[in-house]
Image 1 (cartoon, rainbow, N blue to C red):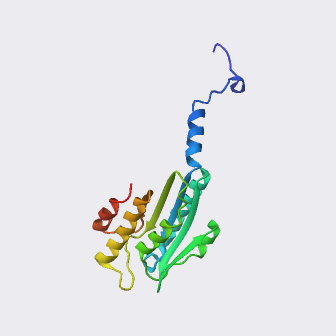
Image 2: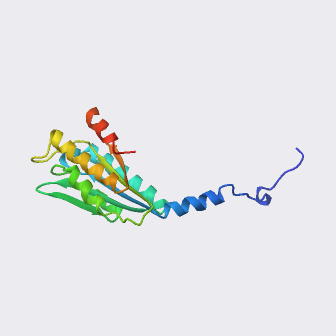
Image 3: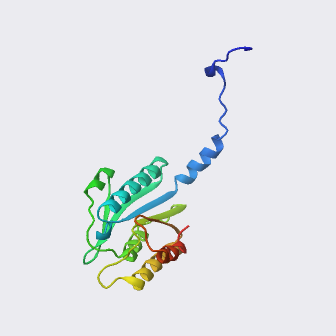
Length: 178
């Protein structure tokens, strides 16, 4: 051993200083909306997994100072959107009713602030849009139309399936998500 160095005496060189400042600048203009399916078909394990995943995403985006909001939705006579203001409130969300995914996506699309550099809509669902007079190919097409219109407003779509949707639906959704 030629000598012993005290780590405290070694000057630190931040190789990422400029990159982190640039990244921070971009992240300040990031707006994220997380939309979670809380319909009856998600009751039990699926909804619990959705809640955990939504909470992890929410915390991660908050950590990087993104403007992030969390919403749950289901449909009885109309589509109900519940905004969660504090993560502690997620425990109170229960699965109920049906789900008109297209209506929920349209509503959240309208809530974006157009001043952000990047807008991201994250949908977490079991991939089975279905309600009274809203099922099958018609419900799927309405959901796809809503996703398409969101992308036309410069909103980047992300879709996460919890519960295993049929491949045909997954492949249709892939067209509008990145």
